[in-house]
Amino acid sequence: MHLFHGKVALMDYLSSIKTTNSTIGFVPTMGALHKGHQSLMQQSIKENDITVVSIFVNPTQFNNPEDLAKYPRTLDEDLKKIDTINSGIIVYAPTVDDIYEGKTLSQSFDFDGLENKMEGKFRPGHFDGVGTIVKRLFEIVNPTNAYFGEKDFQQLQIIKKMVEKCKMKVNIIGCPIFRESNHLAMSSRNERLTLQERKDAAVIYNVLEGAKSKFKTSSAKKINQWVKEEFEKNKPFTLEYFEIADEETLSTCIRKNKNKKYRAFIAVHINTIRLIDTISLN
Ligand code: PAF
Image 1 (cartoon, rainbow, N blue to C red):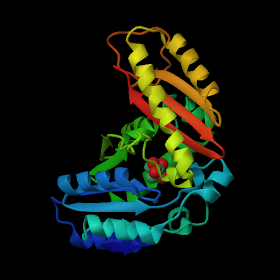
Image 2: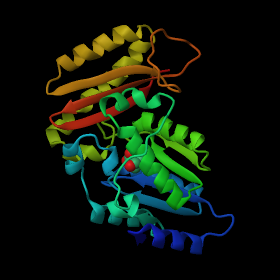
Image 3: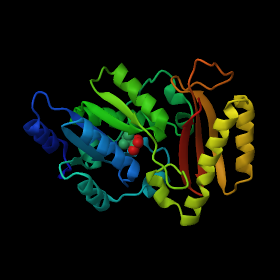
Image 4: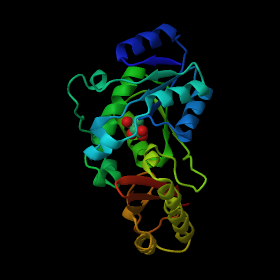
């Protein structure tokens, strides 16, 4: 593994090992790596000559200071995990200053409305922060392919939109969600759950599966009501939002159109921890 904390040294190293035809696969992360991240790295290794992983807890995408302060930071363990995957992986773990150069602020983006729904509605400024950091990382790493998990499906669509609007030359590749044995979607935030909470959090996926099977015969409105009632029975989990939306535009499903692909999206709080998940419905 080759570790860099500064962008200049990283860029110098990349240009020293790249040839004209080399492909670079890039896996941006905020660390606390789990099996989902590991599978993104494995896919990148398979599909590219060089793989770069970034580990950076990006302050501008957190609307809640407590969430930022409590976000797990486990760099030493992360580096060990990366080394067991492949010793040739290049890791960029920058300081806040290396990225933001004294101005820790987001750029303001227009993602054609994708940013105003669900995560964007409940986490103001979040997607400006994500767009800012991902664009900056792409400028530094200059990847051929970049890999993102589908758990953050709205983020994935927004990054595709940013690449299209900013005319960046990188392929955005969405990868399937990795789940625990009780189907809880793997997430760095799961580290903050107690064992009991982790077990009980199975309710999130169970509700999504329930919604999927109801989607064949019920309206989105009826399913929304059912999900609300399920969470009323499942304290201490509280539902922030549940939404059935068009996979492409993320617009809310009012009346089903058989030519469209739909997805259910959910955000749930357990104490101060916020979990999200998603499932394809048809
Ligand atoms: O999904 C994440 O971990 C983050 O939002 C990302 C893409 C690494 C940007 O900080």
